[in-house]
Length: 510
Image 1 (cartoon, rainbow, N blue to C red):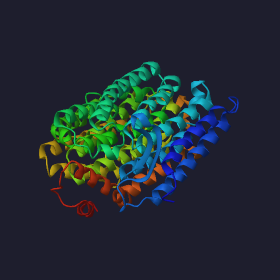
Image 2 (cartoon, helix red, strand yellow):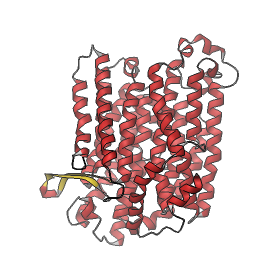
Image 3 (cartoon, rainbow, N blue to C red):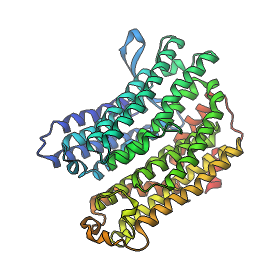
Image 4 (tube, rainbow, N blue to C red):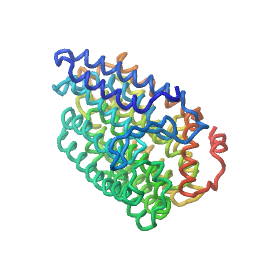
């Protein structure tokens, strides 16, 4: 199976599924949903087969494929996956079927084409897989830009209040970031000997001045995409306006392209510039942790609150990356996965709550747990996972980031720890105001608030809860895949690990 073209098939399959779904009769919405869901399960099955075929102790990049595209420019359809990319591909494969199930009635409530909505979700899956699987810088850039299109239409056509404003703002911010990257991609092609192949570029010795400018071009694009402070203002608007399923993919996967890009392109291709810019990146990370957490505490809109929590979490990921230790780097990559699971669950559950109440305002709830106890319980669990409660997967990530950072930069680690305290404040405040306390009398007048989780919704949340708990107690299957790729990245920038080995830290965590 290791010779099977996993990555190209995985990239193309959702696109084929999208074409099939898009051309189904508009008057048969159930058929479109069923076909989209089954197609996403096929992608999941293929992703599981790829995970099983991956050799954690083998080559850094596996499943490599290369097909000529524009020979005169040195551009090719080159795909390859290391442990970091593999984990993100599995996250996509898990989340998309669950998002499709959770979004079963979203398109109908917007009174727009149901087949087009689910086709857009599959197109988005195609572009997300492509951006993580690309091993050609130009191909990566193409997927990076095309990925904006399906999300733009999901927000602008199927979103809620101020959806058009949010969609345009999301598109413009991402487009500006893409222009910075395009300039850097062209500069890299010139400085790297007129090739876009990642493997060849990683062996090129780029001058200090040129490397710093190219690093800055890539970093700005990735910082906007993540987003890091102060490039974050588009996310609360986009997350607040997008349908819950699309928002789960936006925050759970799309934003990880920024942090993934830093790990895959900024650090290995520009090692000197990465170390030179690291203090500034760490400063942006810790500011983002505290600033976004404080803003989250003051939110009255559920979806905007979750969006601000994600900005704070990305600050942790940024700190983990630029601490330049194996522990912090492994924690950052694990955080990318666990944040996708926990925040994806939180967004989906919040979407279920909002659809029942018909409002996203926290002040319109109060005591909802008395009417929908199971839904309230899942919201509480998702909130605890988001604040990294011990026993949940995000705790392992946060622990590794903080301990790995503390060994090399104690002030940054101490300030970042404040984010844990603030996370408890905004999560517990949200849960208390929505599901606990005195029952809001207006809730009894809303028919939707008398319906607890149905079977379809339980199928959506159960796998995410199981994964969050499983990885909270037993992260080894994932860290075994991540560790070699993180160590190779540290080797690329010439950093040695001053702290105990990751295995020792994991034993201490247990």
